[in-house]
Image (cartoon, rainbow over all chains, first blue to last red; front, top):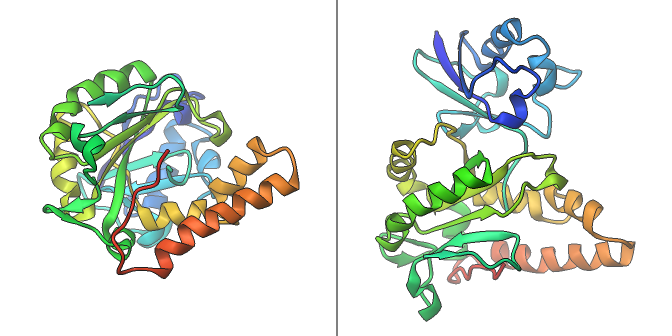
Length: 92
Length: 173
């Protein structure tokens, strides 16, 4: 599946060649993150904790929905889906 | 109209009638109850440079005045206590209208698609919640002060959860 991932500037500053929107392949959110780690080494470590779960300070969305409310990293993705990642949990 | 008071951390975009008592937590013209706010209310989150958000606010202001977007709030400077280097803009609306509003945002260059429900936000700002505890850590100088903040948060958020049938009253900020 080909998926678009939107990454705000504060999460991509370590990778100067990363644009606001990047493309990746995968069947699940987790596979997409792993695929992006191949393009941007260390990307996965920035998002996941030592147990492989999404860090408390990171929120990922699939087409606008928080993936914690779906199936987390196991959430299935489809062609043309959009993943967005933000570096905190919620606004006030 | 854009409310840019230099004494506030936030810049707001409100309908002008907000000063005549207009409530923005509505859906199809009906004011929402506390229970409905917990169930349906939330916001689209946008991150970006302050200058870009200023321009976006100007473009979105007509939609607020036209009552398509209920309310907008964004940071005057990045919230460093949350570890952010960008400002955060929040486009408040009812989930049931959120896709229509997303289309407006997307037309104006927003790519990040991140919906945060009011229920999730309240969970983060209640005593013990991640955002409240981070705020306390960076703003309170004593445990007594921290306790007072937690008590205030509990009284505001607890009331909303405990009185689901009352009309929701937005908090002053």
